[in-house]
Amino acid sequence: MKKMILTLLLAAAVMFGQLGGNNKKGPASQAHVLTNAEFDALLAQPDRLLIIDVRRPDEITANGGFPAYLSIQARELAHSLAWIPKDRTIVTVSNHAARGSGAADILTKAGFNVAGTIGAQTYEQAGGKLTRITPPPPAADNGKKQAGAEQ
Image (cartoon, one colour):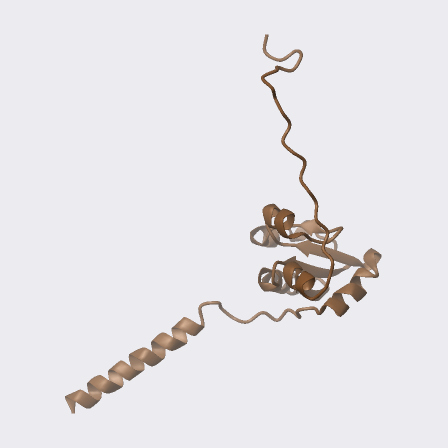
């Protein structure tokens, strides 16, 4: 009898452990992940579209992005809602649409018109063209002081 109870307890512990392990990401996003065709159709009407890229600047520089966008990192989005225009359809962007999906959910819950999300790298892998911007080199100081500085 003791052996059967221990076996049941062990089985229950394993089952609960597996359930907890699968639920670490929280609830699934409700955001629609756009296809390249859907996104390209939205890009064709730039006066109606607002792209919000939630990646870090170094990710945009390294991976490329879209020609015009609003850059708000995912962790800052909830604090930036007051100055995001509500008169445009929004698409959120991240590398593979994971952070973009969460951002789309935040915006949708706040009353914004969100068409969906797209991953920039995923878009490019499926044949889409990204814009790459080369950052300017840092200004050389050469040990010279500016005129009028510290005398």
